[in-house]
Length: 224
Length: 66
Image (tube, rainbow over all chains, first blue to last red; front, side):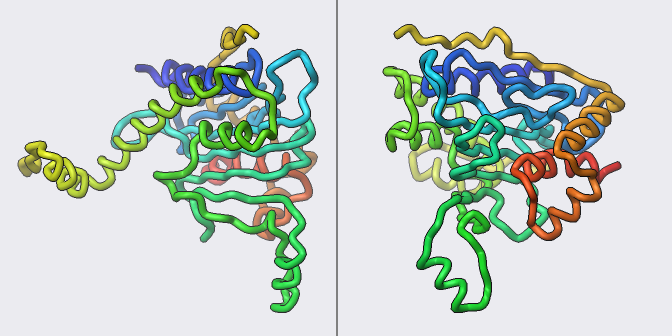
């Protein structure tokens, strides 16, 4: 499958999940570097364009009613060296109350190769927590909760878009389609399969051992 | 209610390296800051806007390799 076809499949899958759950007829766009000259080869998001590689927050509404919140989804894409697959290099999913994304409630961030010590996958929550502020003040520093990077499963087991959408729905933070569970189940099957295959590639000996315990005959490859 | 799951506007645009450079330039300009200013903001983990933060983390790999 060409890089362009992979990108189209990627964006269509994400849009389909959203349109079956918390949005109405939205589409996502991808800008690709056709020369693949660097680590980042693409940008994916809502209304991503030649002049706006990060796009705009997606209005969360399933009817003609105006949205009361927005989801800012942005991803950079890269080609995985050992598989040639288009994969996510970095991603953000932020819940906002304004169409420009400045008033954020929380944000999930992921960076496959972080350039700092924070967890590759983390959650930042915008909120006022007086005991926390008192705790910080007693230690001589000020760090509001949105500056904290709560770890969320690491590179391999981070929350999926489906998990975040489910959170929004079950907490009754957004309106949603009646058949939302079907939309999430479909997306989860894909996500789980991709993550399991990646985990097996990362830990083949552990995967083989587990398969043997389940009764499979698994042999190590012959050295070439 | 009938689900509206159209993805008809899904679009993938492949650009040349020169066009990507221009796209990065325009995206950075949309923040009202320069690359140098965004880099300094990142070093101090103090972005004046969420767009500035999002733009920086989306383009910094491209900017750094040039």
